[in-house]
Image (cartoon, rainbow, N blue to C red; front, top):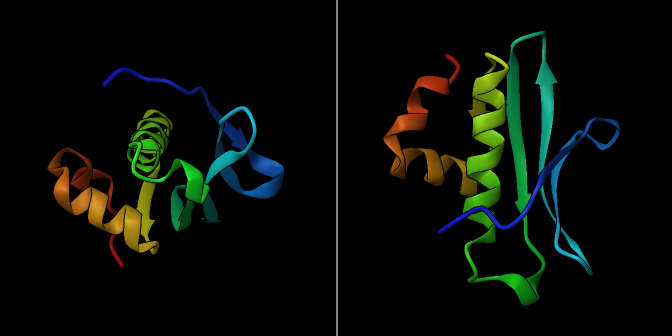
Length: 96
């Protein structure tokens, strides 16, 4: 599956976003210090569920965090399961 949406980091709202045209999908986060990001919520509008948008968004977020050299704490159940199923992202996990 190719990338369909462009990732936007809405720093003011502490969330990553995909503009879906008529709605948005989000990953909310909290920064801890200078090098840790806690992923607190993943949300995709109900009418878009089952289309792989949450997975695409989570992957894009993790790619961005890796590029920035940040560590991740997946507090959101979706991001926690996603990382558990995609072992290449386990290197980003921060010590709890």
